[in-house]
Image 1: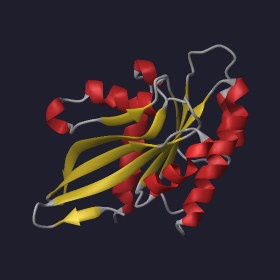
Image 2: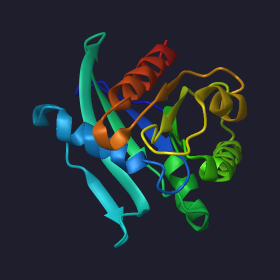
Image 3: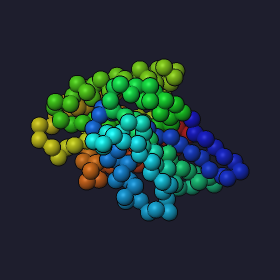
Length: 192
C-alpha cells in the first residue's frame, strides 16, 4: 500500500519486478539507474550471487513527479527468480502497489515463465491480495535472441486477460521505460 507522509508531502509506491530466473528483472533496474538523472535516484542496492543472479532483492528508489502537491517516489524491487527463494519472493511482495512480470521470450523458457506467473498469483493470494485489483504490466524480454516465441503466443499463454504488455531488450533499454511508465500510471490511477 502507498505510504503517504503528510509532513514531508510525499507518497511512496512499491513496484515489484517478478518473473523467472535470469529473465531480466535486475537488467531493467540497472538500465533505469544508468539513465535517470541522479538527482531523481536513491542508491541502488543489489544482493547477488557470483553469477549475477539476485538472491534477495534489488531496490531502487526513484523520485518521479508531483501529484496534488505531493512528491511521488517509486521504490522499485526485484525478486529472486529461483523457486527455492520463494519465502523471499513472498516477503518482497508485502505492501506492493504495482507489478511488472518480466517474461523470458525464449521458447525453452516458457515453462519457467508459466511457473513463475503461477507462483506470483499464489504468493499474492497468501497475502489476501486480489490480483485483479493490483496494477500489473507484462514485459516480454530478450526479444533480440534467437528462438523466441511470437508475441501473440506469449499473450495467449501469459496474458489471456489482456493486461498492458511490452516487448523489451532490457540490457539495451528497449521497452524498459515504456514498461515502467505504464505501471507507474496504473499505480497513480489506482490512488483515486
